[in-house]
Image: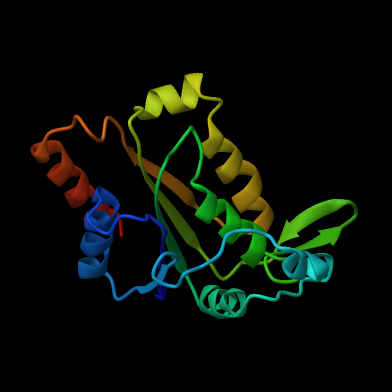
Length: 184
């Protein structure tokens, strides 16, 4: 199985990187590190010029599309900031998941074409616990899973979350890492 891990946390000593290291120990994954690649998440005019035709200006987009086209399992490691994904992840979706690559239009609806990705694991961390994000913060992960990922053709999307990240004990952090290792 070809596993790809996507990470874009700006601080390499964060808990997100501890998760990444545990996943790398368990899998022989290809890592897309948006920070190390200096990925620019902003949709600029030269990016937008070809957007409706599925064309891109940023050479990293082609690199990422090539990796994703060979991926069976996708693992996304991200913090939740202000009840959503950080801008670099949103920019990744905007710039990489283009028409003709991750979807096509058919009878006025989107049909996902990333059917090669059989499993997606979204691993998040935040100050807020999962129940708060789900029931009181408009559940941004539900929209991501049920609309955005579905419209790209991603299947079997699982969301795992560690909340209260700054207050949780080392014991709970290690238990979460063990869990992540088991599901990777």
